[in-house]
Amino acid sequence: MALRRDRQEETGAERWLEVDASMTGTMTFKDPVNLQINGQFEGTLNTKGNLAIGEKASVKATIQGESITIGGTVNGTLTASSRVELLSTARVTGKITTPRMAMQDGAILQGTLEMLGARTDGKLMTIDELARYLEVDAGTVSQWAQNGRLPGQRDGDDWRFDRSKIEEWLAHEKVK
Image (cartoon, rainbow, N blue to C red; front, side, top):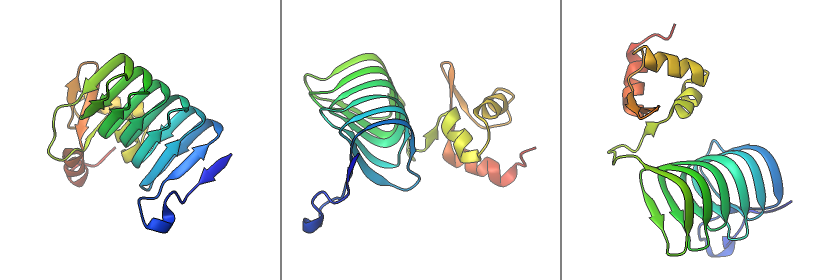
């Protein structure tokens, strides 16, 4: 596995962590990082910061992140809190959920695109994201939402939770 941390380090330009490897499993970054995957990855990927899937990369995963740029092949579910960009060489099969989307001529998306409405705070969370935030099981969050214990909105078959409303709820509600 090759990891490169210092792309353009000498010039003081933005630094990226590049992964040129075949990996399987779960990768979670709790702190913001600029990550580029150039090899193969299968599993779950949770990032903060910028994620780039290189032109020669092949990824089969559930991906959650802030800003995701795809140049290679991705099969799976992508959720971006900020934006997704598909470069002309991108081949995506699956579901993309994001508030902003850019797609270059030549990019292929076979699946669904869910564009969340514009939000002022950009802090809308899914059941899974809220479960991680509250450190409880996703089933518990779903049950609380269905029972009206959590402030949330139905979005088709899914739920969306405004982070500021959740924080207000936490300040005034005791979780039993």
